[in-house]
Image (cartoon, rainbow, N blue to C red):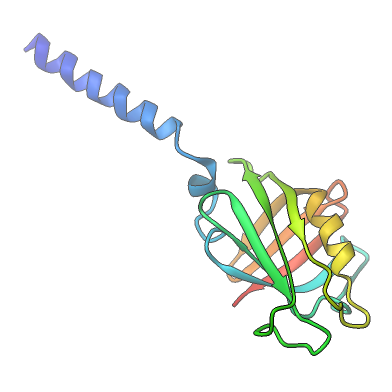
Length: 151
């Protein structure tokens, strides 16, 4: 009987340790990963929101902690090879978010594009939140946000 009880507690401890070491990407929010997010607007929290220059920029957070994305070319077509970028990201259980750029291209940006500002925002990301099909990435100390919609 004692052996049975000891084995039972041993199994409980083993599974508890496995649960504690799960990758935060899969624990924090499963909808962040493998979803195509389309940038809708740039926002200064409690001040203003602007969709100008946000059209045609997408990002996908991959399960392996990499991210990739692309934007429209001057012709405005996402199916034609245009700008692409990628990097690595890390999320915490508290929805903290850190993004490091590893590459980007700057092939003929459309007039009025805020592509460069977008990259700076990603590099300064601090947190994120998901409500339904909407993703907000906060940056600049939580005073600004990038607003996305799932495609």
